[in-house]
Image (cartoon, rainbow, N blue to C red; front, side):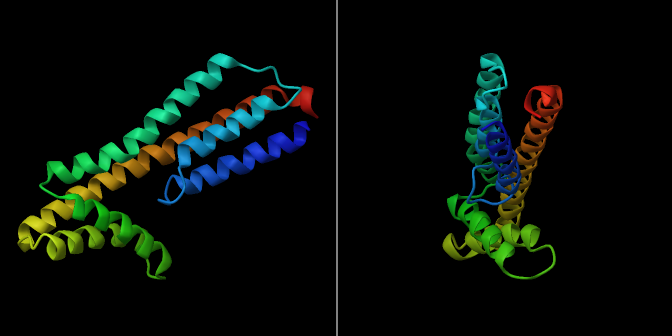
Length: 166
């Protein structure tokens, strides 16, 4: 049972890292579930403090994932159309086989969203798209960093308890 939960936890860690970039998966909460699986292994002593603190961080980052891009969009004069365009552009950028599609897609999506939906003039649309893109990058970077830290914690704890498991 220990090996199964540890492998499942490690799998959830990698899915969480992918989810920190992909908009479909909630990366940090999935990585936290990986930590939880690790601590549910019968041979590992359960650490409530660790699980609660990392869980609160995961929930906080999940909420910030929606706040940060909106702040970037609003700060640069964007609208909800720009924010939606960023998300749609990210999905298209991932699916279309172009170099740097994951970066170009969100920016172009925000720009198109601002220009088409709101009929914004080009200069303002570009500024709003830039704000939306910066918010997206900041949010993605924070999520990626958190999931990598969770993976590091997982591997560190696995190393600590290796004698109990194997």
